Picture 1 (cartoon, one colour):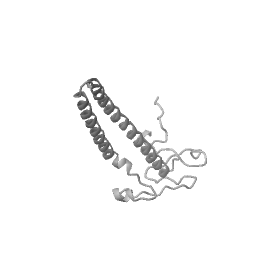
Picture 2 (cartoon, one colour):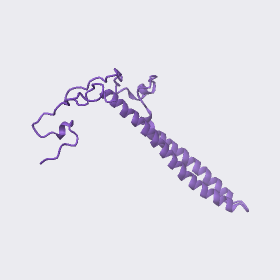
Picture 3 (spheres, helix red, strand yellow):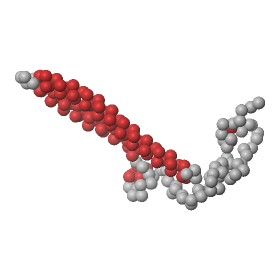
Picture 4 (cartoon, one colour):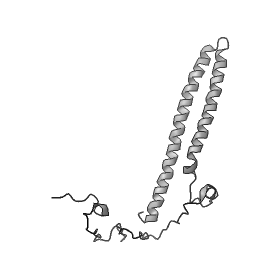
Length: 157
């Protein structure tokens, strides 16, 4: 006895030589088919919504001056933004380090300078961590948007 395929609509789950079967009920509510034959383009969604085909190769400046916001540049430049932000954090750390050392050299303010030195290290570490988290969340939002757009183009949502 063989186990049934995990996803019966998946052609890769069919035994060799057998053709996949079309569902009897017509698919999802509203009559939209959820199974597509290999090599056959997907049908339009029942609601008639169509996502304009993106050029895919508009380039950076084409996407930068796309006033309809159909192409996102954030996912393309996020690495550069992160590097620039890390450079600014490093300059802030160097400023805090120099201030802490100059404060430690003054009479009676050595302990305050030491606390400022510890604060510079901790503040820099927290700044890098929070920056990374915020930028990763931003990328997640853009990837969700891209995935939803791809689903709409296929007629799945």
